[in-house]
Length: 310
Image (cartoon, rainbow, N blue to C red):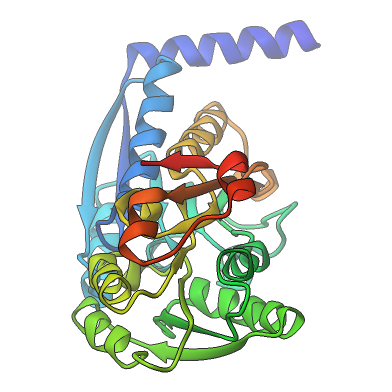
């Protein structure tokens, strides 16, 4: 029986190589983390010998456009949809219950209404979660600024993924003796003003994996540098861009993990029976140049533990 299953899988993979599949990609907005996930997904399919015709669509942060894109992708009758970030996944799931949807960079797919259960999704949706270690990220504030008592968080309350992280942050802050100052935005153009509103009110700033804010991260970085305030990020790409530190995920590898799952689905696996996957390891990353610009001295023990951006 195992030999027969192996032969069927091999025949299917050979057919994939010979005949390209059509994959629609829907992404809420462009920023390095989401772009890295998309690149990882495509690289994994290529590495596995899958020929694919990709149609990539970006809503540039506009929800109405996102739902129009989802409808157009479904109408084009693709073989599979890659939905990057929670709003994209919700739009795709709203548009079809038949075409397999692989999600990535979705923090809590169950809370977002995409699956019934992590282990057994029960829908046409499966993929990877980018649930990040929020509590450990806030602990970095104490390691970098031991006397810190308040942390500002900028996020979009309209993003289900961000709301989940804020609730985790509230509990973590209570344990750590930190006061949270929450500021919400609805679009990238409001991020700079939101950051400015924290002036004189916080000892550090934390940006979770919020797509609206991360897309305009340079505004937050500029504010933190000017006011000598440490900026803790929700993922590694933001540290590479100029945030001070994170314990976060590698979105390129998350995309590759999603790509491997996509091959299984193209090979006949049922998304409804395919568990949501998580990235098992998180990377401690610090940016020495950002520390200098923000007036922070990184403790030696932290430097020794971390992957360092010079």
